[in-house]
Length: 421
Image (cartoon, rainbow, N blue to C red; front, side, top):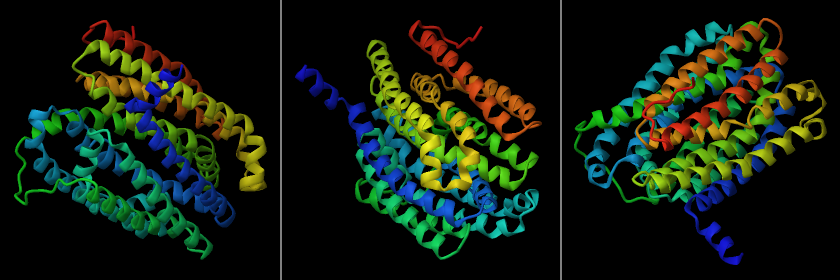
């Protein structure tokens, strides 16, 4: 029994998840204080405006953090890695400059779309962290490739401490939505300092895009998948903001963050650990299967108790922690929270497809699932925000377990394409 415990805690995936868990617990403790301050300092309308800014910056971060240079650098063989590093560095500069410019150009049209002209300048300022990312992005990818996720955990904790404490200070000063925008810029420096300090790689100084096609050919699939993930995650925000009032959007946004926010943090923590863990075993199908099953098992052990506990205790902690004005959001919070149960398993299945160079199958699935969810939400949006939350729950509970099952069957039976028929 003792040997089994020792083997468990010596496992790389468990170690990585342990580090990320510790950092995320620390982050969430600070976040709870942040949400309490914001829920008591900001109006539901201001919450709605913050939801719009988060949706925009999250979209940009899909390109920069999720679907950029990192996936290929993590998955590349040792032989091809050295030839990709400088190219990855300059490719990321082009990407980040382009996204920064695009967000600045779109700031006014987005503000006009929502009928909130005061959003224009905050959207522009919120784009400035993109210009810091290229200075540490390659180091980040190499650290993850080396399975040293404790570095990312430390960076997460430090940036959370500095950034979210700044949010509280600015909110208490009465800065409104600026209490979110300015700290995001401040916190970015933490990532820069920690990643640069913990990895020796530096660009050669010579501009090159040699081999960029290798990066693009691999990264286009995780990028497409993450874009669709983003669209699904924010489709309810977008439609509620359009069909209902900003106040209703604020209620839904609060429900999502106070409910599913913690669970999604845990889900992303597991997802970030799984890809490098699976890539280590990609040359051996039997070992890969063991790593995959272990990943799913750990997901269940983390997510199920978390979601069930949080959703069942919502009627108790919401009025006590956040204030009685948010009692109206409790039913939506519970529904949205439960929709998190199958999400980590589908994410692990997506990582498996990327590991075995079948990103196109993952992309096809995500196109189908996004289309289905969008149509369902549009229909539900004709009624009320509770109907939207119910539709999100039902579609996730039915579709994601099916996807996970068929991915597992396809990859480990040697089938070359994914079929849901």
